[in-house]
Amino acid sequence: MTGRTRDREVEIPRLEDYGISRTTGFLPSGAEGPPLQRLPGAYFEAWEALLDSLQGQLLAGQLRRRVRQLPELAASEATLGSGARTWQRAYLVLSFLAQAYVWGKNEAPCEVLPRAVAVPLVAVCRRLRLPPIVSYAAVELYNYRALDTAPLTLANLSVMHTFSGGMDEAWFFIVSVAIEARGAAALVAVVDALAAVRDDSHAALEDALASLQASVAALTALLVRMYDKNDPYVFFNRVRPYMNGWQHAEDLPNGVLFEGVLADAGANTNIPNGRVTPEGTYGKYAGASAGQSALIHVLDVALGIVHLPTANQPTSPSSASTPSKPVNFILEMRNYMPGQHSDFIDAVANSYSIRDYIESLPPNKPSSIKATTFFNNCVQEMKKFRSEHIKMVSVYIVSQANKRKDVGNAGVSAEVQSERLQNGLLARGTGGTNLIPFLKQARNETGDATISTTTTTTSANKTVTNRTNSSSSSSSTDV
Image (tube, rainbow, N blue to C red; front, side, top):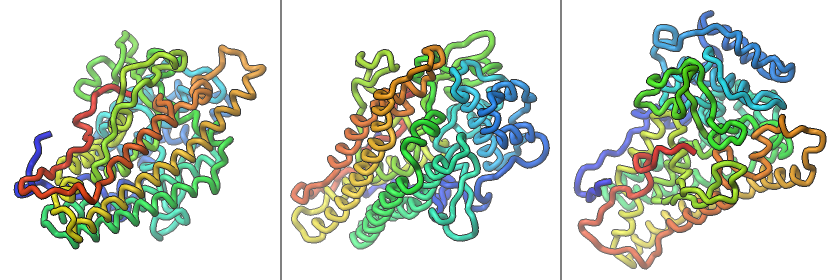
């Protein structure tokens, strides 16, 4: 990235230019309204009807048969129109059906996704700049609904769809939605802080950083509410399996075949991204993860928190002892965000650097020390957030995985052992990461962003454009 000094004009991104609301953040709202609860008209009723009965079909072992019977419907402007909400709804419906089809219910995973879902899913994902698999956007951003007209809080949120049909899964999604809504104030604070750097306004910068600190603290308070209504056993055994992807799936070594999707159908879009066959094209993608939330990425970039590649990550459960090429999983997750959201992260990364500005202030002056303290308070709140997340992962995944090891799999044949169980036994993330080492590295890197009050330096030409990770610097390797 080319550095620019503060006396040169640098663009400060506007939230509305990226489909971001000042009150709901990355959650859809505004002129087009909240997420659609159903695709309009009768054309897509077959999709919607099958999603309506998803849990019953899975439980009866009929979901795959019903998907194979779906009519082949076109996903285009002629059928979906040009509004964002119809395309987002189509993505939710199709990605839920695809995920349920691939993983089933206590069944071996299915490698071939039928064309009736595969072809329109790829078309919709090309439009939204998303990979053709369920993601955080599907289960969180496009899946919420308000219970009434009050602000979006835990007391006024519900979700439209779950895989299990249970309240624990619904709560798992709702807490993240509430975090997104509360995070809107943090996004406003980031933009205000960038403007304060541009204007060389210490008072405005302190106000923005104080707001940012309070917002991140509020996110942590919401995060720990997960324990209230989401049982760890239920989450690990009944919810998390449907969040898994097929990037490192031992039972799906080639990924999933998108039937009817030709090799050139994903030209210039990386959709799909695998081996080509006469029947279609394979794709290998990570599963849904909170790491795909653009909110935390924006905060990292704004605070100059740099995440490095994670070394020694296994490529599959059977190769856990074999070191692989280091991959920057945090940056890779930006490939799983709606295009506008990853664009906003890049825009913040290419704007002014709050950190560099503070480091350029005259050393030991009270105003410099004050600004540094405000900044460090924000960094420490981010570190606290990540520490709480590590505790939560230990409870919901690591502890449950260890219980699985103790119990074993008596009476279950190896042929029907699903990949989701294998991932659980290794306490790995849905994207293939070894969870605790990965999360601890991210937390430690967060703490490293703290500025010493004795290291601020005077420099008239100090570069203050952002030097943090941007998605443009990440590789195209999927996790």
